[in-house]
Length: 554
Image (cartoon, rainbow, N blue to C red; front, side, top):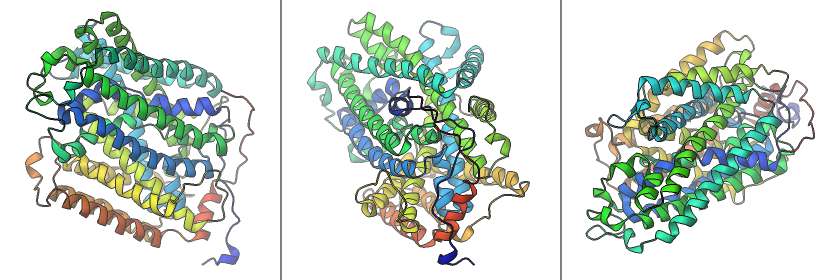
């Protein structure tokens, strides 16, 4: 067993073949275009239908939650600026036993986003092309499925551009995606009716606090914020990552929070009072439900704005699908660097593009079109996968603070000893609020992930050791969350709702989740890899020369 005196020197992992051609704006817009996707087109109405005027509180709560999680990612990404970071930080901190689980969920979350965004495009495009989407079943038709495949293929084709060229395309799309919601906010403010926030007989918060929390995952609010970590996924291609990466993440989240909160305000405020005769919970206008902001603009006499929004409803989700295809290929690259998947996923072309990972993102993404054929049915699963992935960041941050306190940290999370465990508690609460139906499905998916990656690793003679001692808390954490969810107050709203027992009373369930989460967090800190073992895993990914910075700014 190695001793402290023989521990490897502090170093940084190096990504091989990737080129640092992404500047601050390009990095920030990579995260921003992921945040402003299909979520803003659907989630504000879904939230209002669940909790009425109190939906604005949900966006603020979610914004605070996401900012704390984003700050954890900012420290980690600046400390170890590697592509596919969310799949690699837990590997360094806890070894392969835990790293496989977090890495698999990072990939699952990323690879399913492009299909979701394609469904959003089909839903809005069906206003002009009725044959591609069936509004009665909320599913694409056979024709729509074929067009979705073509759209995903376009995402892959654009991603084959060199990063400096891809960044230019993405920047143009993102400026549009940010400008249109802001423009919409300004226009709809002139149609504002304050009474819509508390309709007669319903009040400000018809679902109560219970409904407020449930709406975070169920309305797609947490899903809408997904993507802030994209700068982390592209860290191996960001110029001066110690400076630009944390700034990019923070800028993207702050802009996203402001836009989403104001969009919720104007959607509620601009709704004609006549449509709220039965309150938000009794809202039943099909035209607005099919495309909330475009439908609302048409109803209030702004037909020209409705046309602009329907165009944006194609551009905006497409931009998000495009960047998530990028991120998916970088996560599979990172999994290959961890030696969890075949090394061919680490192959890059002359432009520095992980081309095998791009093809894999396309093919695997198509699989997720089959069992989950609509936007809403995928959102719950992705939200759960996202939050499980995000939970790895505060755990990794806390572990690194104990393992290598002397390491260079261009950005340091303030009060990390307090904020890191709080971030982990919040992540667990979001998982719990997703509901038991989502949680048990994620459990099955995780088992599949361990089997698949285990098979890959069995054929790799250079695979890292499976550090079960440092991951002993992981199955207890996941099974424990499942049991609490089963006994708790949130079913997920699906067909298995009766299985949820409701045995743990509301408020006490939050206390139970928080206490359980803190116990798991500190158990994980106790069992984290020793410093020398952690540094050996880092050094395994530092043996090859990283390509130099090209000096190109975008």
